[in-house]
Amino acid sequence: MTSYETARGKRNRVRYRTPDRHQTDKRGFRTKREAEDFLASVEVSKMRGEWVDPSRSRVNVGEWAEAWYSAQLQIKPTTRAGYRLYLDKHVLPKWGTVPLRSVQHADVQR
Image (cartoon, rainbow, N blue to C red):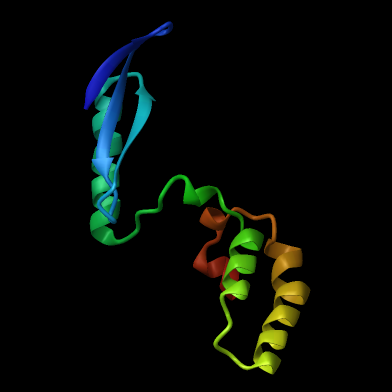
């Protein structure tokens, strides 16, 4: 953790490693305590297997579904066509614009 000066005063930056071992950082914490709390939450979420890359957390369900669908090349054409139908009829109209990070298990079950 390091501190730096801005026009609005002193800020803190936290550097940490992602689960895939890349180094990244988050800046802008007003207090050292805020920075330490953030770092602790990152470490706990990594240990629990719940960590989500902040840059990937902005993806919505529609974008993710299209990427998933385009990767489904190992299945029969009729199965792939069925997937397309379910995406277009059920998933995308309701969930297409919803951020992926906002989807809870209970929402999907309903």
